[in-house]
Amino acid sequence: MGIFFALIALFSWGAGDFLIQKSVRRVAKFRFRQLFFPDKTRQYANLVVLFYIVLIGSLVLLPFIVKDLGFLFQSGAFLKWGILILASLTLLFAAVFDFQALKIGKLAVVEPILSFEIPVTALAAFIFIKERLELWQILLVACIFIGIFLISIQSFKDFKTKNFRLEKGVIYVIAATLMMGLANFLVGLSARETSPLLINWFLNVFILISLFIFLSLKSQLKVLVASNTREHKRLIFVTALIDNTAWIAYAYSVLYLPMAIALGITESYIALAAILGLVVNKEKLKPHQLIGLIVTVTMAVILILMVF
Image (cartoon, rainbow, N blue to C red; front, side, top):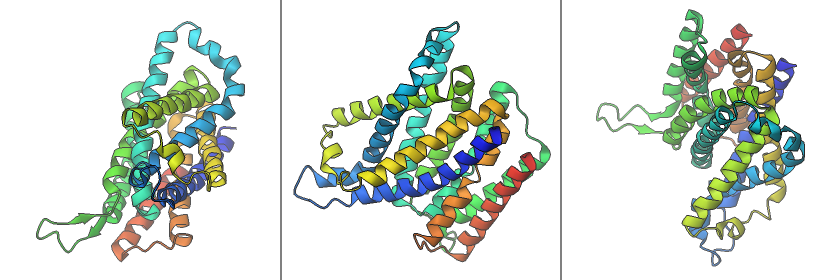
């Protein structure tokens, strides 16, 4: 069952990131420029899509978690609330950085960098629950880092002048990776302390309220209706279902598998998403970036197979 749920998360995350990028970019293409501050609509397009994803997730999951709310009032409730809130905060920042990276960056560049979630999550597991990395795992992670470095650099020509340029979105995706690695660990821990459906519902509601407050403080609630989300409501709805399915499946997988193994299997979604970026989006990479993509994806797959 653990492998089954991990594979569902793998395909859902791969397809989900592809659809998130498509949703964010379509929402950012505002047609009625004279209405409702279109520049702000484009600026907050990633938050608009994230808002609707967590809104749909909150509503869909609500009927299934009512019976699980008792988890929050059992013995050790303070610890459960603390883990849930920390996981929600971490995932909120990770999602904001991730959506921004997907909006401005190439899918084939963003996804391999996200593979660095593996060592971040492994480090968190080592610190908090004493899971250790074997030597071969450390070597594979080092190879992944080299691949990430190659694919992240747009050009080596300016290295001599110390004016080298990073690909668009790389800074955002690095921040997202650090936060997402910790979020993976906290979501897995929360699923064990409460329930997979409850943690995902709580995450959605927390992020939903946070985005509503943020946009209210910025006087930008109008962007939620100013954008052309209604025109792409089917795309956003499917994106929301797939993205929520991925997190639910991951949360269930850690109930049956050690966290490192569950993450190892699901992390190969980067290969699926990167291939979608190259094949469907017709993204172009320079030779050294293509080598970096191959190295990163290959090492991640080997890591998955060896852990498995």
